[in-house]
Image (tube, rainbow, N blue to C red; front, top):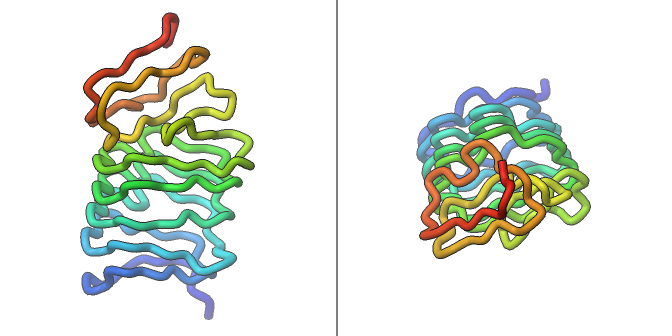
Length: 171
């Protein structure tokens, strides 16, 4: 029988390989896992709300190419993450997906993604009109580009930047 749900991971596991048949999982509050790898051709299509919430020692994850949505607070509290890559097929990223990722300094989006892009490691809508998330681990001053008209919920939460400069008319 194929495994389609991952419901328990022993505390001794720090490097987790998720079988390609798994479609649903939650690793919420698992503070031992450092690395998550999905097998090639993974059946996972959604990183659910709170899927990795509180995985404070998680330092490495590669989101499978087939994922189309990243839920709210999906990676919240993953304080060990320094970078993350959003694949081509992601169509929706819910509010606070990366909240409290205090060491996150870079978000990279596949150039072929029709909905999102990255500008200097910051997550934007593809048209650049909405700043979705500013990595909390970035420091120094940041100027939001002209043409940006809105900012996502908690986009600058836990920011370590000394100054955020917003263009006129931003909502």
